[in-house]
Image 1 (tube, rainbow over the protein chains, first blue to last red):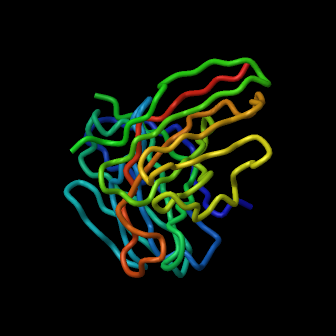
Image 2 (cartoon, chains in turn yellow, blue; image 1 turned 90 degrees about the vertical axis):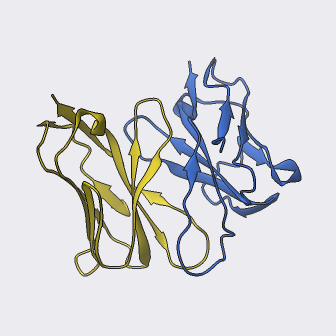
Length: 112
Length: 119
């Protein structure tokens, strides 16, 4: 069993739709949770960062963490064609090395 | 602010050949990471440097992979000899924080990667 599981998709939705991306994990030591966005032939860029359980909102993006269920989500409201990319969840421990453990990524396409 | 620079962007080699990748991190970033991203998968950490010292190389195949970060700035990752399964994108990332710092996790900034194809 992988430490972090993410549905690879691909996911295709019309412009303006609400998108829900999810990851589950098995290691209860994870404390920091991130979402990275990766455009084709580019490196990942940090999109959202959350600590422990709860919600965080940034513009059209909302990140949710449910540590009791070992489940994290990223919601994109009013999706735009420019949101088309691969979304990677990543997580790490509170202390020690900053070793990120990534999910395999979900490929998202927003259709105009 | 300039981002993380990597070269070359693409490389095609025959199996059993050698290859080297170069990374120049963001100025002032003490921590440097090398990741391997196989097609359809998330990045996997190969090695992490703090200045010029190795913090974590537990997932580096040391029989064929080596990395160094001389003077605590630029870094090179080498594969010798390459295997077919080494075909992947090799990503370099850097961050400000020292890995033992407590509190907030630190943002890692990624370069564009080097695409390696081993034939």
